[in-house]
Amino acid sequence: MIVAIDAGNSRIKWGVHDGDGWLSSGALATADVASLAGVAAQWPADARGVVCNVAGATVADTISRLFARRHAELAFLHASAAACGVSSRYENPRQLGADRWAALIGARAVRGSACLVVCAGTATTVDRLDAAGVFAGGLILPGFDLMRAALASNTAQLPLAEGVFCAQPRNTMDAIVSGCLQAQLGAVERMFDEIADEPDARCLLTGGGARRLAAHLKIPCQLMDNLILDGLLRFAASQGS
Image 1 (tube, rainbow, N blue to C red):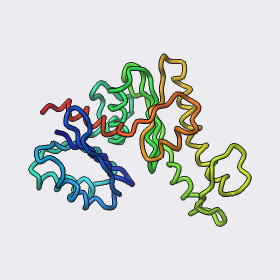
Image 2 (image 1 turned 45 degrees about the vertical axis):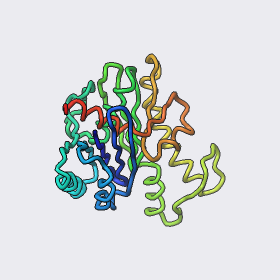
Image 3 (image 1 turned 30 degrees about the vertical axis):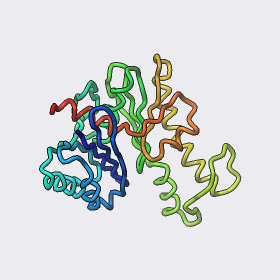
Image 4 (image 1 turned 180 degrees about the vertical axis):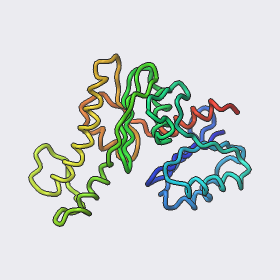
């Protein structure tokens, strides 16, 4: 039994897997990490834990103490030069975010062809994985909500917009929402151009903003709700029982 935990900047997502499928899953705000103890009371007592954490040392310590009280094994995934069929061309492989590395491992588990791995959260990351399982590089840009917030915080007359996406915005609210979303879509589609001619190339989308992007992308794409958790699960399996 494996408990996979994805500790992100805004949310902590978790899932319990029995070897055949996800038995349960959930999410809470990262700021509420202390309340994870109440959730953990429902997890099987013998479940091993595997974590990717980009939320800082305090969150990592809280999760570690939680598993220590349960006397359960816990492993943290860190990016490396190679793992689970994925190899990295990052200049310093360990500098890659653990969530990006987990998503790449998850993508390799389900795709044997070239793909673009997009994690749309507080930040949006756009990573290229080739058919041989080589991570060639990728982008980091502010996520959709972070872009909107930056405009509202750093300009005198632009609000935190709640407009709608449209091709030719004719009011300020729609212009902000459409501009922020077009920036996300453009980054993804430009990166996909580099693999578009490869057989069965696909864009895999995960994260809280994934559905917003999928609704407007003009490339072959697939929503993967548990891509990071799937990567953590595959990493845990590679570590043995």
